Length: 257
Length: 282
Image 1 (spheres, rainbow over the protein chains, first blue to last red):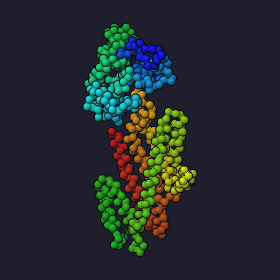
Image 2: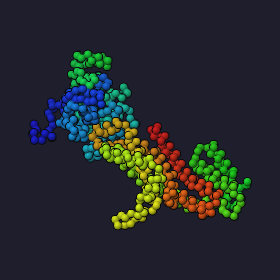
Image 3: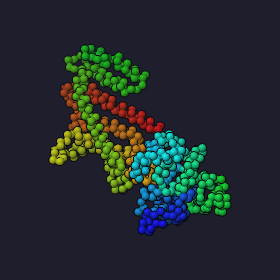
């Protein structure tokens, strides 16, 4: 399929994991937030991480694109060792897109400029080509006509969809979603979830930290339940949601479902 | 006592004009122009009352006669303040970025410089610069003389630099950390994040404190008279001496200087306050 002489350029086959975590630990001072997390995500897979607040979900997802350095363990993203002290963070982050709970759009730029900035300045792509793509991406997240709007002029749901388009403009291999609907009004949650669902259906590898259990049940290929820094239980959504074994999982699910 | 009734008296010298001005000031909105006119009236009229009909020029006539010269002095004050602000801002932005640097050595040097120049009297700095900077420099074989006012400008630029550095640092720190995270996760370098994302957001926030520094430095430029720069205050003293050092000229002449600075700085102060309010609500 590909020769071993150029492993850097090779694309792993679809059944090999694109994101792999092995015994990941993370401490903030005395507090150990992650206590040995291991899982693997294959290309095109949609993985949801659920669990009570403070169980380390956001820290976990931030470790994957090196926003938070790990204390010990191994994370590999498409051949890049995240824990490597000589890690090329920029190379990693060109592969991994991230969407935040608070959208974090650049307030001094329009929706279109928010989407165009990184491809032009980070990837050095041609402005006109990027602009065409940015228009297409905004249309894809159903924001055609909002190109000239500033973040302050848009609803939370609209801002969040711009944030998704901004991330997609970098053509990432993996998308991380950190409780992206938690700050939204109930009526705008749906429009964001629809956008993510379409992405998932197009084969984008997605790792989501979410409180939207119904969404996890419908869209995820695999669901991980975390509590106090460990993965308590995991499995396909139909089995985890209907026949969880661990009492902590059952208690949590009974509270949120 | 009756006011002098010479042909040159302008209506502004007559008492009823003064009271009308003040009455309008009391009822109407505070306007710099009216306030200035009121001040001018007081400064010029009060000594006019004290002085009887005389052969020598009235204080108002003296001010009028020397106003063109005094205003050139004031123009030098303005020039010193503007150039000092320009130099100080350029250096201060650099120093501010040093304060935000990830390199610990650079950061500490920048911190020490900022603290030093923020916490010493401006006048002492001025003396230092006047004595340390040579009166001429040789650039590429050409001797360039450095006049006193240029040296004084450098002296004023130093505290501006330190204050601007602190303004830059505080403004950058006031941007939510989430903006850095978002930029980082899009693979922007630190430098790109700072210049393309963080600093553009800070410009508005930096404007009011920056203008504040300007108003302070504009008023401080009169200190240059102490080191012999012929700016407005120096000229005022010379004019006073040239007019025989009459005590009754003291208030009008220096009052004129006060008035010029007030009319220059007050609008800046109002504009700063207005910008501050606008950015608070924005």
